[in-house]
Length: 285
Image (cartoon, rainbow, N blue to C red):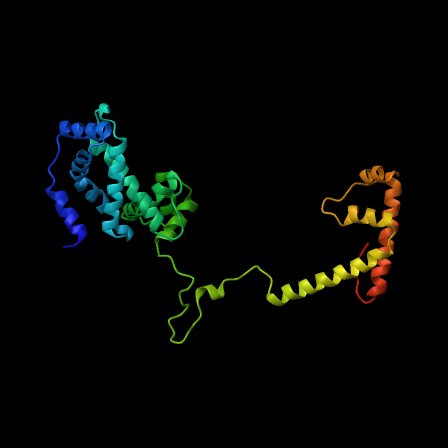
């Protein structure tokens, strides 16, 4: 006999509890951490767990796993239950059981996590029911009209309904799945993904060109005087780029004089670069 079947049989044999018995067991577990009280309380409500889990069997997940997740929710309810509020434990536990099962479904139904907000979660779990209900009307509805009615009923955007409907219409497809069923075909879906990264030959060419330009610039910088070199480095070759005023203060000259020195230095650099590579406009002042 399978473990799931044993669990179901044990749940069906468990006696129903009166309100007073529920209260007593809940108090014993809360105040004294009585394990036997928790076991009896949870076992007597496993019928409820199985009933709630059965409502979600159409999502394609194993019923035994749903029951286990529902049991986790039941234990969470037992830990948080406040007997003095005079609410039946089954009423309180139903919410935790359902929440635990729904969270499990959202985590495992697809590799893409969905239903991260309360409205999206409501859309995920009610879309099929509302779609079936509205599709059975006398007047046929277009997809757009159907999506709008569902959006109005749940309180989400029509585009969200269309997107969720598309997701629920088919399972996830692996990128490693073959494109065709043709024997001998080795092409996977991932082979046809377009990459924005540059091609290998472009990377190598760019690296070589960058190194070449760096050598040309280093050679050309040798024609500059010490002051010209300092101005060019701080104005043109640093990430932030110093202002004319700050350089003038540092060098003890006016900012107009800094501009004149910079302009002359750039002309000298341009001439040096073109003299070394006359066939390439590698630099523009």
